[in-house]
Length: 290
Ligand code: GLN
Image (cartoon, rainbow, N blue to C red; front, side):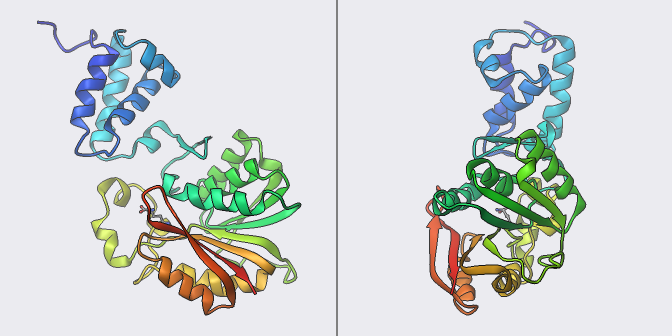
């Protein structure tokens, strides 16, 4: 019998380690493939599929074992490979920014639908993180200019880097701001204010999966005792900085849509509606300033 050593093939690795990762990951096979791509020198995904019988060199296997160990200990694969795809675009990510999630794509899709035929749209994104929302809007809305606020330094640095790699840096202004605090010109008005704020209830933070709780930024996740603090604060503040008929658009937690609709209604928003994510959960809330 062969030793488990330098003669493992790509196929052997996928089979063995997908199995080992089933407890830790919802996407074990994808994770192994992403780690393999990195271990083999950032090869394309297709290379993996075309070379299933290829043996790893000793060196490649050592790199892979280091990466898979990190993953088995709970570190999210996106932080290990420093990349996550969102809206068909590549985003650099590292600890300190929330990893972009497919749950957020319906928010971006809805805004693209609402804004695609308008000219010179001015958008403010509050809590930009990796820049996933801002950068996809900049990419897919030709006539938009964006302002992206974040309270922390790492997101602003990562956001700028992603804006450059996606060739939209000329359309985005990244600014350090605690909600609206950086706005100096009181007359400034946006067509759209969008946010995926922290929305997890304080009590629920303890029950999150290790890979979220121990690795992703706490201040991008926790939204106060009932999880709604940021919806209250942003909705209240947004009114002053939106044009008439301007759009306020949120991602919300799986059971928060009704509460957020109510908050909007109580703060002078109209034509409020929700949109579902791919799992059928009300994930997006949109309202228009009266
Ligand atoms: N959707 C994220 C999660 O459940 C939370 C993101 C947020 O708080 N905005 O991990």
